[in-house]
Length: 401
Image (tube, rainbow, N blue to C red; front, side):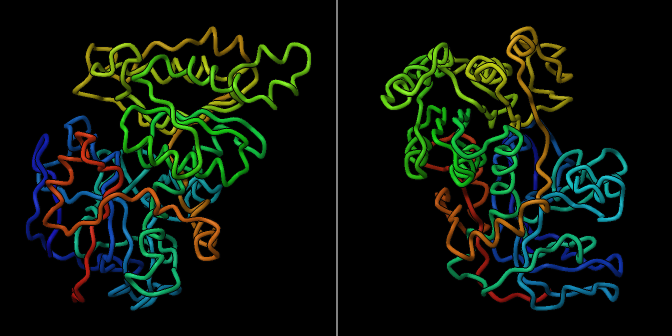
């Protein structure tokens, strides 16, 4: 089969790889119809989360079941399904509590597993024509419709970025009427903004500097903030002061609450310096979220922070150790949530929002390509140029495992 694999820093290749075979009676083989290039795949591409050479990458996967093991009960050949990027068993302590992002059995090295990603277990990725699905009954979400229909792109985003964006809003305690600031307008940041609006937020500000991304922010109904034009937190303060109705409704002392109720870090350790966007500053967004949130507000960290990080500057940063304004955090009485999204907690409900027309997450998709174009798309996506916001890889031919 054709597949995309990691060959070294800034080098992905498309080559023939062995088609996967069933390893357990609980497995299934999926024929992929659409897969995505995720922003977190760029950490691998940049050599910050390196994989073994030749590893098939990709964790955003949907398609049609080609074959099932004899113990699989609820999934059959021909079913259309999407896979959570989290691979989970369904029976361990964490899975039983709904924390499928922290499965204790699928990865012997850490409490989480995923397809084709560093430190997430021995699983090949899904930027390929076929993929092996462990514990298919638990990990497959059945979908209506047929491959290539009007829901195809929306359903693919259920594998990761839509549930992850929604989880970011949950971590930040977004609720009807609340005000939200989101740092980062990549796919997750955009869908965190979209999810915040779905949850009824009254104001949503999204910070970035790339024109195409900021245009997407406007398309989904949020307010773009370009940090290349000055301190983004001060820009948000100024924008809030221009809302006449809010200002007129203030009670005594409330005019001091110029920030927002909730903030989301959708950037992580590769954040850019407010004062010099060409320079990386891992803690910049952490500092921004603490500054922008009003006292007793909430922060959600969905941007990735990793260790070890061979590309970091300084020994502490390579270990994932960064300075944090804990005194300001404590003084404001803020709450914080972080970590990977438990995709299965949300994907069924988000699927139904898509089916009933209440949600259209695919509006963030910028490019649809064939697998042979993947190395070029990685390069463009990594450079954040030519409008490469969200890239999907399409398989249109009927293929047999």
